[in-house]
Image (cartoon, rainbow, N blue to C red; front, top):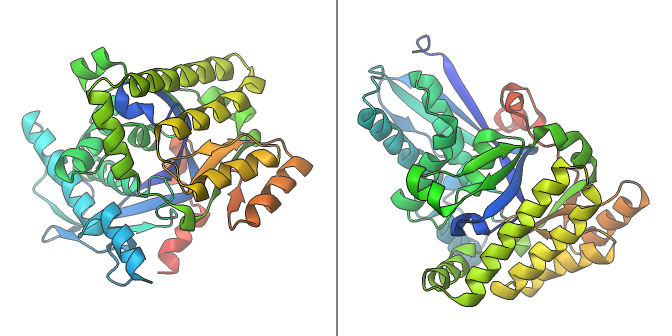
Length: 357
């Protein structure tokens, strides 16, 4: 147990699904990365009672009826606090089930978030994964790394009824660039997939990556995912074939990255989106982001479920053309800095979310 009143701090970064998504919820394979431009910072301070402080996701004021409806569909009626509570519940149950004794201590949990909302960059799972990291440090509990994303997913999926898979939570727990294989046999036997860090290849890949986002183009993914999942569970031939193809795209991408064949990646990125467009009901606004990026010479696909895209674009004039073209339709474009585990303890620009609050 940490010194009395010492602040325990945990950080989880935004994530982008690079290849294979959304097959993580369908026993597929994916490549994702977390990146440092956006994050959740969470603090636990020892206190006399367990207390959860409302954050931005717990807003009670909205710009319009449309924003209220979308926020409640995404975050529910209790916003970020319900996520903190759900993770805490599963953490305490895990300790009980594994006969792990923890200190008789309470905490006050407070979080800050600057991850753009509703654009598929995994803000909600960042809140949950940061909470689990903080709880483990606060109580001095060591949970196997491969089990941590499953706890986070179960908090959201089982406790809160949020449609989600493991991909986001793996990227935010492991950090860096991660290849994930959600083989059904392994998942059924262990509750988790096989996760491979590709950090040795970040330096070669990172200069080519870009992310662009526009909150106005966000999609509410839950309904579409539920429909596709129902079709998958009923062995719909088109959906099962698509999920197998998504997994194959991720496997090809992993092999190309490891073997240094980065020229093969743009075609895989584009194929990933084209396949998704055939299976999911992609809105015209979100499709336009992808097509504008492609018209500027970049590859493009969704980083999540809509509102943000990820792809590859060479540096120089080509990237300048990309940023200008996307800016014309209201998108901001960045070169993401892929996170490493050590970045969680660094002082980053995102620390200003505490200073300016």
